[in-house]
Length: 109
Ligand SMILES: [Zn+2]
Image 1: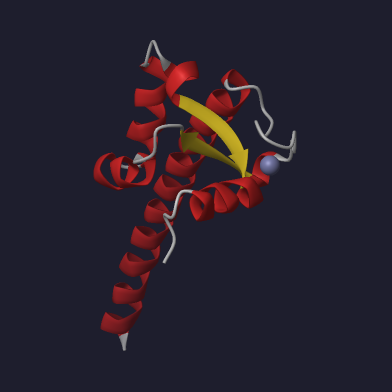
Image 2: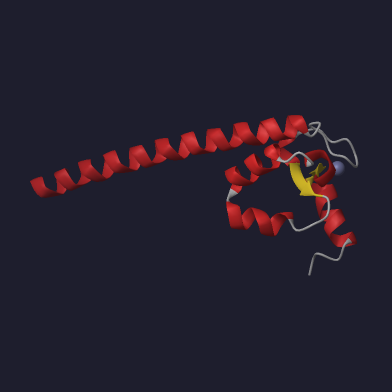
């Protein structure tokens, strides 16, 4: 039974460090996101909705979703922040307007 306790201890320590890493990662990502939202005006371009929980970064010319999948969320935000044309290429839309835009552009199936 001693072996089992030892195993438990190791597993516990490991999961703690993983969750701490996850928290740090999420905080850094959320900071980046907040920075970007603020930079883009902190409200929906279409309707003015300003609850950041439902605001999404929209690639005006489309294709933003595909790009995000390739580079990862944090790298994606960083790339947008470093883009000199950021205000030409990106806008904020709330979840509703983003869906409506997708329907309008025929991006949903
Ligand atoms: Zn909206």
